[in-house]
Image (cartoon, rainbow, N blue to C red; front, side, top):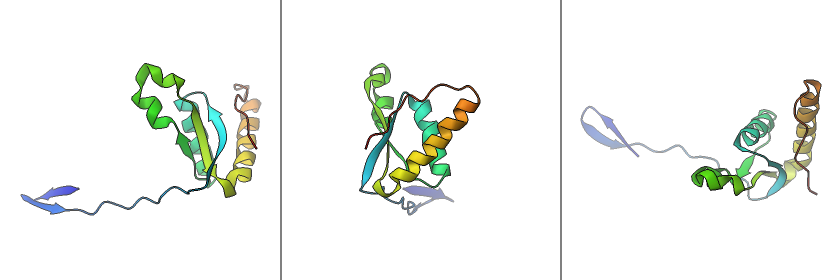
Length: 107
């Protein structure tokens, strides 16, 4: 990456992004990008790393993107905590007459 300062070009080191864990496992599917973003935000707020598999492909394919499944993936060591956090999330949604939980947990 290059930065411009006072007519000179200098190379700026890009920040290092922590690599995703190698042991990601499927937690739950999401119906659309909004639902995936909400669930990811809620889980990350509770300290659980989340990767939404299919997010980039769905965005790139436009109208055909709806056929790409969105899968929330979490580290294997965090899967039980993530299930508890999602159960809390969905119980809070029921209190405000929100939509029913559409996802399913897989063992």
